Image (cartoon, rainbow, N blue to C red; front, side, top):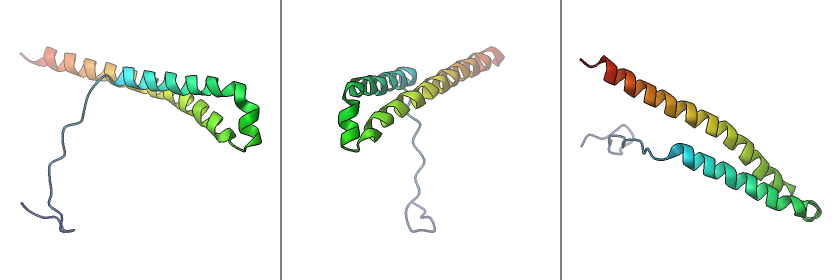
Length: 91
């Protein structure tokens, strides 16, 4: 096997893992929002201990998860569209 300039052997990159991406991102987003909502009644407790970042991290995770859901749904639609276009172009 040919080595690279760093002395480590080169390997081909593995195929990307595909799975239920939309469901995974949606589930994670729901989890972040649930954690945020569960912590809200204890806001004062977190504030007294200077741990408010826990609450806002969960809120940010939920917000970013919404962006992630939008992104992966668009990605899945583009993949399906590309597959159907490729199937339609084949004689």
